[in-house]
Each structure stands twice: as structure tokens, then as C-alpha cells.
Length: 443
Image (cartoon, rainbow, N blue to C red; front, side, top):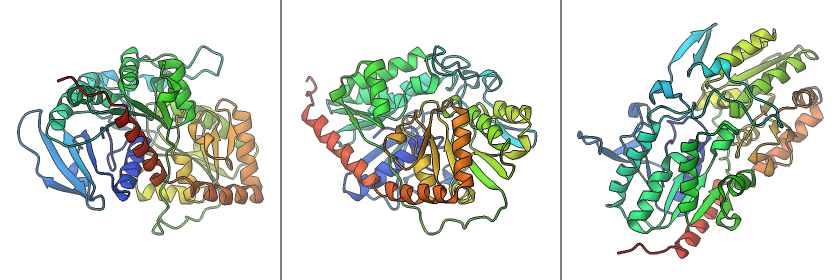
């Protein structure tokens, strides 16, 4: 398995999905060798046990370790700097934070103050330029990661290659070419989700090469499958939809915090894809009708400064709280505080956060442009651009306790049917099919 993030070093839903899948595969007895870029700050990963110390050598340096509760999963880290969601000017370095108006703001270039989003029918979505989400040398790091993965693969025993998203596709293709082992690629997001019609052509070619080189393709939703068919020319029968899932919430979650105001939560990256501008626009309309509401935006991203300025311009800055990026117990605490979770994503291949909200007993409003809308029946759904309808639904949930209670109770029932074990078993089924289609490598 090839990936570029894993808890606690995560920047989005991919790390959460990789953790859920590998944990479930461990439980059903599937042995996984997970290769990922070297984590920064290994000391903060208290749940990681190093099996061998890092070699003090050149860029072929690797480490091998395991998590104590995943005996069937072995991790190999390689010395590659894969930092997604940054700008070319940053040369692949992690974004730095600066204080703006009392908030911690992650700024990633001028695009944060110039990016806009158009409504459907306006020739796509405007971004600050192709590839602005990524570090300038990220393509070189992908190729270096691929070369080191090939070196690792020469000395490991495995039956199938499972590559997550475009940054690992070159490694997957190279390993498959060297070994003749079947390649399965897992598409969690496409460049069209991230950039609308203004795609980075090099990233698109990485994605296209990966999905066509693979024996089988896993998509996180039918929404994503349809994009792969229409935009990448992948035969529909080559693609298997495997939905993401949710772990049951542990009993050790922090207790609810008392408050007088209703709290509406946005939790995710503050980027074009997640629709934060629409959340702020809906918030203003809600506050025109209800004053006892506070809007919390948990996350960071290249639109943070723009969204803070937008809230101030609308005169609702005092009603919008920006927490910055949250993890662990802080995520559980903010869910416990919330009365409602809203995900206004412009294009969301799946969206795990609504499942997490329901697991914490929080009703959800989700955009119709999300994969998770395919599996949740007891969630209110709205077009991301329809801020009037979004505001109306927020007001309805906050003002009508029976609706609030019904969404919570039925949502809890729905998420019990979505387990990582089922997702893992479907992936293993895809592996078996890929192995049966394998074409042996030429001698």
C-alpha cells in the first residue's frame, strides 16, 4: 500500500481513510506493508513504535516501524517531502502561520485573497492558477518517492499494489512494471474536484496514467466514478465503488460544553473545494433571522485570510470563530459543542466529516455535490451554491427540536451500517479480481 499521509501526520480525509482501512484489514487478517513519506517530528507520534532506527545515509534512507495495535501492518517510511495543499512559491515547505486579527492564519500565497468561486454554468470554477495547491518541487519528490518505493519493493513479499491518489501513482506503476504484480489505484479525489476546470495538466496526466495502468480502480463514490469515466476515459466495469466509513466513537470523548448560543460547525480544509465562502454567506442570512447563533470554522487552508476578511466585510466577524487546524480530542470537543454540522463542499468525492459528526450525535447538512450524499438518507441536502436554501435548512434544524432529534437518531442508525471492515473486505475482493487479471511480467 502506497500513501502520503497517516495519523497523526494528516492534512485531510485521506489519512483518516488509510487508517480506517489498514486497521480493518489488520482485523480480517490481511497483511499490509504501508510505504509513506518520512513523517516529520516522529517524537510526537506517541503511538508509533520504531522497529529499527533510521539509517544515517543518503536519500535512499528508510525506516521500518509498526503501530502496537496493528500487528499485521508494517510501515516503511522513505525520505521524500510530500506536502500537499501548498503553493509553488513555497518550494514544497509546510505553510507557516501568522497572526491576523487575533487568529492563527495559515497563509499560502496571494491566492488566499484573490480566489473566487463561480456558480454552475459559469465555465467552471476560478482558482488562483493551476497547481497552486502544491509545492513547487512536488513532482520531483513524487518521482523520488517512486524510485525509493521500487527499491523497497525489490526486497519485500506482496501479492498486490494498492496506491492512494495521484502522488503515489508513479510509484505504483513503476513497481507493477518491475514485478508484474497487479496494481489497484484508489481515487479519493481528482484534479477536477480540487481545481474545477482549471486543472493542472501534469497532475491530470499522473492521474490518467495511474487509472489506465491499473488492473482495477477503487473510487470513493459513484460521483467520483462518473468523473473517472467521463474525464479520464476509464471503462465503468474497471471501477469498483468502495465507500469510506467511520469508527464507533469511544466513551472517553470530552463531555459537552455548556453554552447559551446555538453552534453551527464547519470542519475541514478552508479551500475552494470545501465551499467556505458559501458557509459564510449562509451564516449572514441565518443571523438576519436568529441572533443566538455562533458559527465555528475549524480547519486551515489557503482561503483562511479571505474568509476572515469576508466575515468582517459582512459585519458578522464577531459571530464567526476560527479555531485553526484541530486533531484528536479537540475534534471530539468541537463536535460535542456543535448543534449542527454543515458541509457546503463544491466538489466532495466522499466526505468523512459528516459521518464523524453523526457519530458524535450531531445532525448534518451536506451538499448534493458530495459522495457521502449517496449513502446518507437522513441528512438534509442542498446545492452548495444555494445559500438561501442552506440558511433555511440551518434555521429549521436550530428552531425545531423534533427535526433536530429525528436527524440525530436516524443518522446514528445509518452510520452503524458503514463500517471500515466492510470497506476493507470489498478492497480485498478487488485485490483478488486484480490478481486474476494479472498479466505476468516479461522475463
